[in-house]
Length: 238
DNA sequence: GCGACAG
DNA sequence: ATCTTGTCGC
Image 1 (cartoon, chains in turn red, blue, brown):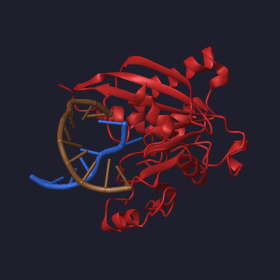
Image 2: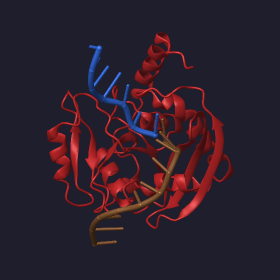
Image 3: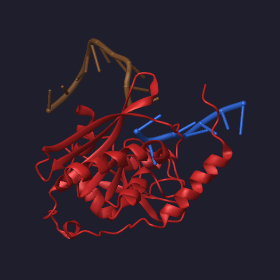
């Protein structure tokens, strides 16, 4: 039913990613990010798309804003949307970003004082084939600090599910423990984080925009009650 | 041909 | 992403 993705479209998407990649800020840009306890941080957001059974065209775009550090729901928005782009690993942003951006713009228009100071994104940021995953894409287009949190390892630049990787996971003893994901160039593209004491399977954290990796990892841990950071988890609970 | 494939 | 029950453990 679905035609194979046109070669020229993928190349167009790749050049779009390369263009926007230059706008990513990989450092802390906000005052609260330098504080040991994130003093000044009051609102954290999360975005996600939810699907139903065999329907991969209609989805529910969700945005929640939680208070920090209490993680209470301040705002919630759900909107049924019709997707146009297919899912292709490495190009997730072209499928999801337009609807996540719309949700953020609705919030900005209707309740600007509730805009989140940082957004958790379901997927990778710099930990990506071309160092420009969904979290970077949404960050650059929205201008908001974004953190990418993937639940599964994307095998990129030599990082894979090797025995070495498995033993590094086994060495994560407590919530907050992490190890770096190092690309072929030697650059640290992200970190595997044990997000809570109870979950042995890590999450994969990487920079989206306007935040450093260490801050992103520290903040992710601070927002986890369970394995998945609360702002993202709350999206699936309407 | 085989494996990999965020959501 | 989503389909799904019970089951084991604290």
